[in-house]
Image (tube, rainbow, N blue to C red; front, side, top):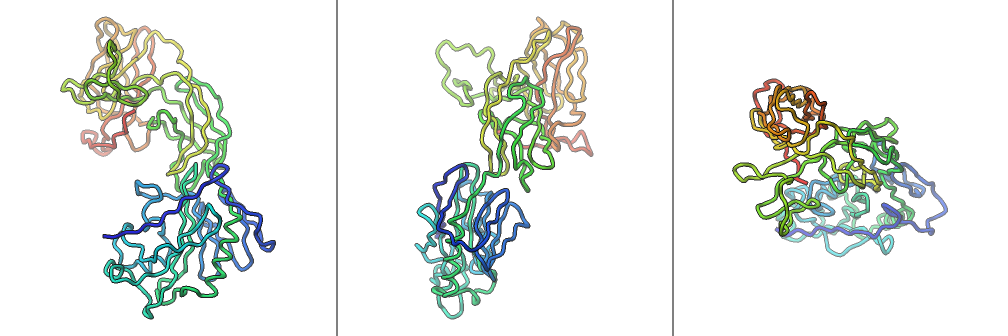
Length: 445
């Protein structure tokens, strides 16, 4: 099946990008919100009722700016059918095309040029036999009609789209190529887009405190954290899959608080390799693997929980296919305790009854109490005070990740209480705690 996807990517300046020019008409007014600033010409109206979308309308012509383009495709820009979703005129022409990956039904190499950095792919119907067989619908008079224009950009914070559509589902009502009104619309659109400034949707200005120990509450200041339709959350650049409890976001979206995790998870590498900086590398000569995450008894891969390593980290706020600028957060060593955990395994996809091993120090010969969530395992013995082994209890208590089975594990005895390590069970059915199902496996670090 032949598919021609038109994706034009612009070179951006100043964060998400300034595509401005000073040759806009003096007439008109400036629209300005959290996401976009642009001059609007007379005869055009603005609709911002569905943020972050900005729709600029003249009659049946609809110019839409989506500063945070979200798509399910794994490729930059997504598929043509994803980028044009909601464009009624495109949907009318592609009414019989299967899925977002099919033909675009359009003539090649037509562009609405705005600047040297920005051109919209102009879509004119191409009534070929192949397109008709793929499901394209064309005007009955056989003349080429315009049915939309499209630009997909890749900024430093997110992908974005600019589309121009005609509000009709009737292919016979589409404006014909060369239509004088269509030409005037093109001129207006180019003039307005030259003044467009896309603002970074998520901005971090500072973090308080900028150095903290694991378990501390961190406050991030900035803007855009209440972004509609986005799962906004903090992310450590070097540890992108670190599970962080759901943050608390201020109603005005200008601050976000979260608890700095006490542990990270690492996975085993294939035999002959070790994990370094998140990658599996060949074991160096003379390397001591004693403190590495061990493979399971059957030599299959394992997951181990370890204390959050002290160091300097880049922190960003992310949402669905959007991210903020980065700030520095220093993770300090925790206060020494008489009892401590250096490693717990397995700590992912744990089944009740499965054997868990804890490495550390300060364990007593008897009387060690292990707590996982609200579940208690009492009087766990230790030979040498460095290792504990016990069967995983049934998950109990409130998970710190709502809807998932994430719990904090610690050890206490007459010497004191240890640090905490995350343990993830298979998700328990709340209506039947004996019934377990697989939950999503995080990507190993």
